[in-house]
Image 1 (spheres, rainbow, N blue to C red):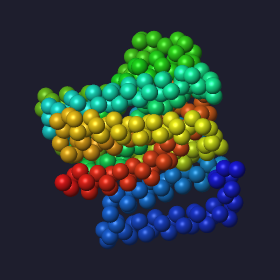
Image 2: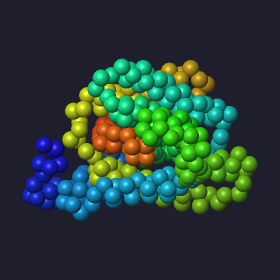
Image 3: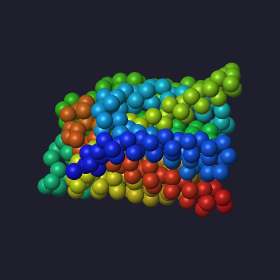
Image 4: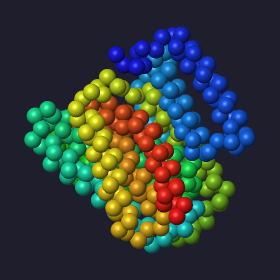
Length: 341
């Protein structure tokens, strides 16, 4: 039986009381500055996640609310965060490597997934498509709040450029792969339409134009976009709590897919980070991005192309849930071993 189904009403009231106490302790910690910022943000994200679980258990919210929250994050939070960060940093020539790294990692892992799933007797065509798509798409939206709070605007700007490559491949190659395994109606035109509808894509281009041509953009407005976007993006953790589904957690390909996405992405991005002429912060951002959880667009594409939606939802949810544990640890390790050097 799922963990969330095991919660009684008494348990929920007890957890809700503890959440309130936890918020007070966190507020006190902020005021006294006795808690490391990274651990503080992790505690806040976990509180949001548990709140989502409670709201779903008490039927005060459902997956429809989660979808609305994700739409707010994608259509408002990410564009504001990207625009506010990209307009404030100095763009170096080597920044062009970031989209290339994202594309290389995604295409390489997609090839690995294709090779290892083509002779599987367990996966049907629609499930195989979900595995390949899941391995390729990086859930960078969950990294923005972590990197924003841990390393600041410079890290967010670099991550936005990685996300640019992630978005281009996701809304072109990955869409066609999903279509091939689903409805079979994939086309270049439909892929371009999806990409052009992706507001963070336009926010990045606008920020690059403002920065590159030195157009006037008030610093106060830039800071406003950055701070507002930073707080909107954390809603992704509340949405995760509303959407997580652990009933399919024993499916043999779920954890294999997560392992290839995370471990394979970590190794490949680390290799590229040290082969290419990048500064320490850029290397750190690239490594964290490469190890990102499975993207929520795996579920979006599964719905759009009639793939295995239960597998896609569970895979994305459990991957992001695991990411809430290993991403902060990875950031701490890179902080000590790479950025402190």
